[in-house]
Image (cartoon, rainbow, N blue to C red; front, side, top):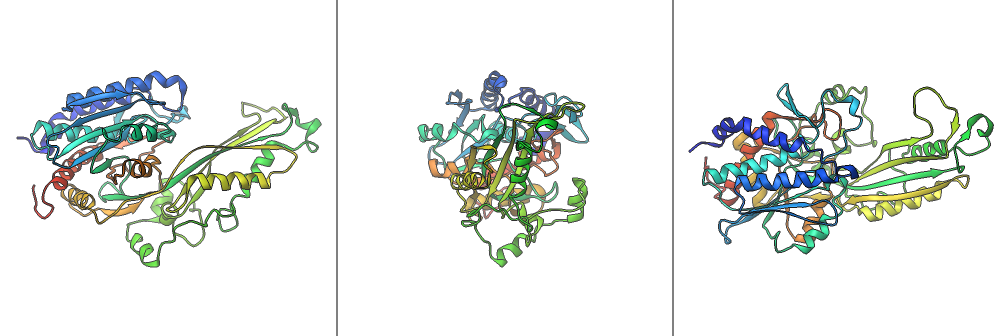
Length: 460
């Protein structure tokens, strides 16, 4: 019988070609022209689960994009793990910044370069291949189910109701997720916290049409100018968010907890050099690591208005808009935050323009326990693969549906991610290290064996 390392080595080319087949499907959930691609991606995954050995593998309709469900039940009295992932990806814009076709994966410098390679098709495929190995080697120690959605990148609007309707189908002891990152390729970590999200849009309207900026400028309020003022006012001189009530529910960590977090390796100079900035920025009184994990934020994700084409066109725009995301920490409610945001924007908007605030989507923060059997099994699995214990960390990112799972299904989640902060997820030239892909498969295999076996023994 082959070991997991041998199995990965023997089947590496096949694994990659199967993954590349999924990546080549442009499953951009937020763009309507890719609706058929979403169905194709779901069908492709259902077929991969069937090939891997699932007893049941099916595509379920939802009010949005389809959900893929699969399962292998070896013994109803054994533990059941529900694997969650997503097959949808972010848009590729700006496409001109890609060094190769975003949907034609290439391997360069030991990395798979393509949209979705890391987020989340590559990481999801690790779960499928670990499942395949355990079945092929007759080593599967527990029951496994898969729930793979197509709307994570747009806030999972259809999944909560689908889960509510299919609670019995999804019954499990644990939800396992590979959609997060590690501290480094040789520094494993387990994500134990995710920030929540409130995603908003501001639309400022002035005159009913674009006007000549020479004839009307100085007499008619410019929506772009007003929008810029509004945005600039949302942070004070200490880079704290100025929305009244915004911090009222924010969880405050103790000095001991902050000191424990500071044990994670971090080099500020390397951080700045890696993303080509001279200095970091953020809320006074907190480190860079704290600003991106335990503190809430407000950022402009897109801003537009007026003429942005080549050359010049002297107009006073009729409209200007911005999309803004707020990352939330434990105890913050996305709906309440959205209301506070809208109320504040309306209160500071001048009567020379009309302002519309739109709430798009959001999700609650999530904190995972570090004293559970699942966490201990994951920690031992990482140690088996990497040769060192993983560090528990809180991520700055959001997976809004995770907190919903606990509310709707009553199941805790474990976040075993193998990405890196250099993967450029959501950006041009997204990439995923082959080493992370392979170590991820191996670690997941050990997790199942430790989770369903005796944690006090070395089953290796």
